[in-house]
Image (cartoon, rainbow, N blue to C red; front, side):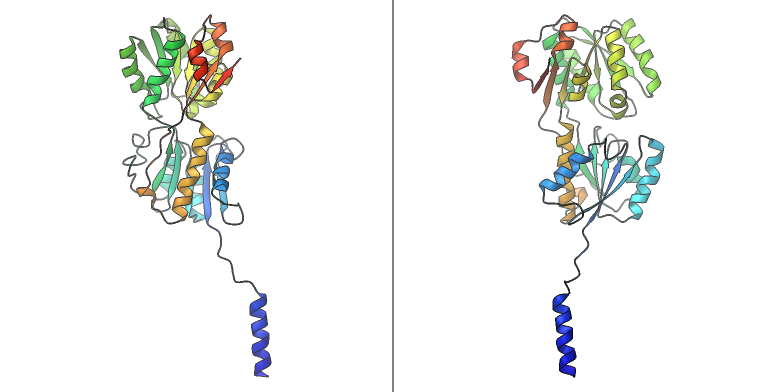
Length: 317
């Protein structure tokens, strides 16, 4: 009898698969939604590393649908779900997650300077529980102004449109480059969407010939309005990301946003394998895209030098 029972137990054990370990939970906090905030690029980054959603990783989303006031509570909700790591997509999203936890690893993808913003102590050794990727590179501001001067050498007055609540060194670096190139710079600080009309009025009064837009979510969300105001006043626009040139800016020069977000998956992977976020350097972009809008150039009576066209990653006709 006992032998029969033992045989039955053995059969049951052999027939029953061992309890699989639950896949790690990765929290994702977005300002908009998974359909609008480059979340697909992050998923592709995970797939590149062998992660299959639902099989060896689970993604837990929270998204504010464009309402910044919801971010703190959504961050706390994610923390309560006890994820292995949280992806914070945006310089306005990361502070909410940082305030919600000092222990759960955070991978932040931001377009601001994370040191100036108080997210980390140092880019090389962030310390604490945060690492990630920033779109910021000190060479970008000077390069954009240089490219503008290549297209329109006679330009001597520009304005920089920036959000003072979005800390980075783009305006400061533009000032340095402008001194070297003999260009006067006007500061247009806009902290809320209602300020763009007055900013362009001020630019017109100062006879600014071009506006360089410092990247931030506020500028991105109001891109069409900015392009329309500039076109109405015959002011050229230069910015950092390809969609600006697509929308009518003269040119854009900056990192590929999807590529940056995709790289954040590498940080998540390293943390899931045991790395400490505070010891993972904040990555900065190393590859930049030049997009030129020939239609806009023609509308302003400008001829793009062939040497510049040949260097462009994309030319919009």
